[in-house]
Length: 326
Image 1: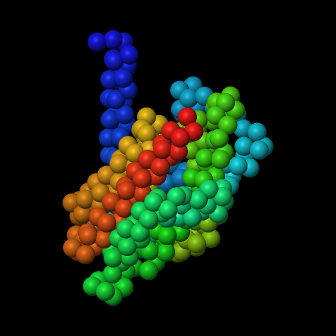
Image 2 (image 1 turned 120 degrees about the horizontal axis):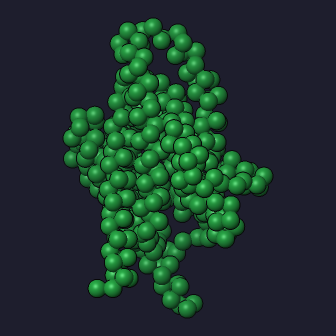
């Protein structure tokens, strides 16, 4: 038993801890977000507060020296502003989708994100996936389509579907631009721009962008309906629900980045796939969402399984290409 064995064991335990934390916080976010939407039906305001609540965690971490404060150049600001805009769109797409329909449905549709990623990566970076990778997207599309139907008739919440698809589009673009922004690892390290700090900075930018959106879409509505709302739920409870939802949102994303930093592509795909299944089960068991029909469960299983297959095949193809050039 050597020091390297002990270090590997500790690294493995760290990964398990971060994955468990990621899952737990993600379940908490989904449950609280849906509960908050049910009691306080203002998804734009909820989404805005969810982005801003992260400041309660970020600022102390930086000010106390737990994490180094990032040093941004004007070029960094421009890059991160683009990522923040896409994050804002993707976040509100998901929040609105879950407010319009069941969170389980949103997660089924969001399983189609690799379809967007593959197409957009080809269009933007001129890097098209091989045919065997593209073929794995067929069950993803088929599973999502089957979940949106009852028998052979389309029956779904159109607003929830559109919100989830907009989220897929925005988050796929965000991932591509994020990867390009972090390409120079040495320069990023010199400016304290690791993945956690980049996430913190673009979340702050996204919060600033979300304030006028929340005011435009729901500011006047909230002011006019405030007496009615506070007759059903206290002001303190509204604040508590929104802050807890926001902290769950920020911390689950942070723990995800810590977990995924220790995982390879296949392990990442497995964890991400299992995460969606765990969340869907938790939403039904908690009573927040109604039980899914057999057809919807079958479609969800096919779509989520297809997502896993896509990631595994993509990783294997990439490893084969590396082996050829080695």
